[in-house]
Amino acid sequence: MATYRYKANDEQGKTYSGSMQATSDQDLHARLKAEGKFLIDYKEERGRVSAKRLRSDKLSEFSRNLGKLIKAGVTLVKALRIISEDESIKPKEREIYSTLLRDVRQGMTLSDAMMEQGDTFPNLFINMMRSSESAGNMDSIALQMADYYSKEYKLNQKIKSSMTYPKILTVLIILVVMVIMGFVIPQFSNLFAQMESLPIATKILLAISDFVKSKWYVMIFVAVLAYIALKMIFSIPKVRIAKDKLEIHAPVIGRLRKIVYTARFARTLSSLYSAGIPILTCLSIAKTTIGNSYIELQFDKLISDIRSGETLSNAIENVDGFTRKLSSTIMVGEETGSLDSMLISIADQMDYESEIAIGKLVAMLEPAMIVVMALIVGFIMIAVIQPIYGSYQSIAGSVG
Image (tube, rainbow, N blue to C red; front, side, top):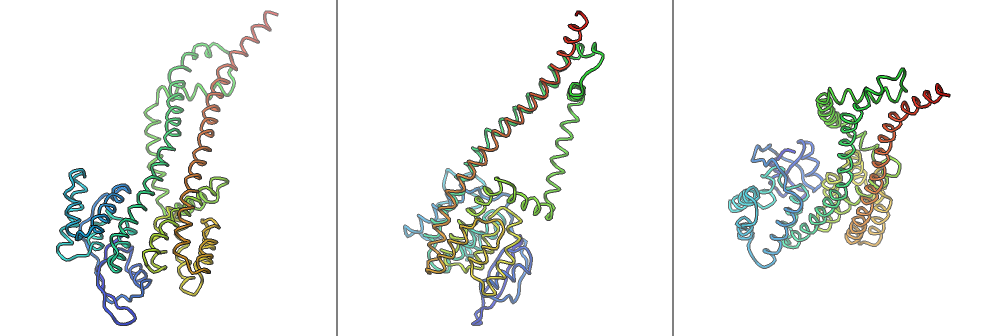
């Protein structure tokens, strides 16, 4: 995303100026229009860019410290100074917070100062801070963001810890196969060489074993090349969209992935809407946190439908990739006039269901990998035993 300095007017003719991140000038125009503003002039900035985004746990820690300090009556400048001088933070973080402090001291708003950091702070966080600057409730919004990123970090850690066993099992499968092919099977080569004919399975096994033993470096090269090629292929937008679409329509796994994506979207949307941000802007920001390009692609039509007078619940119901529960809950919120509380309720509920869904995904993955390992070992055993058993039968037949 690029950073743009802009000037815009609202319907009353009031002039606004500031910074905003957008993918293009058309996207900038659309984002401002969603806020009820009309673009007059803009200029793309080439400011400072941080190469690495702050992790969720660091964002949570920063938000919580900021919220508590401001709630205690500390000024924003002093709060940033206290945070930047904390001895427990790393030098990179200190540099980020010190830069924020310097920019705010020079008269820049906190949200604009965050935008100057490039991709260091996510768009969600920047827009929430911008909303709090207008509403004057930065302390409560910062604490809300602390809870949001804390939940996100815990969920990510749960995914990582859940995937630890499958990763270890994958490495073990590869190592076992390499040891068998490179060291165990060659011990049978002399025995098999004395046999007149070998089963097809044994011939395949010996060919693989010879290749692993003599051309192991080719395997590593091909594996690295395949990894790079796959990354390049999946970076193509059409391929990535097709892959993401297939993911949510896959049997069993697709339903579980839908729950995870719905949870991410619901949590982000509830945070934005409860902060008083216009619903169209909420949707534009929330779609970027889903993590599925196929679902994100459908948001242009969704936003267009809402602008045309469609209700949020009906528009979201047409999105392929969310669970029905999301649109049903939003419909109740629209009918009762309590959309903000219903969004928070569905976000909490979907967070819980997403944790269960992740557990199920891992639970299905583990036995699948064990089956794969069993098939590989079974093939090797059959390929080794079959010719030996056949030779014994031949000997027994000749003796008889």
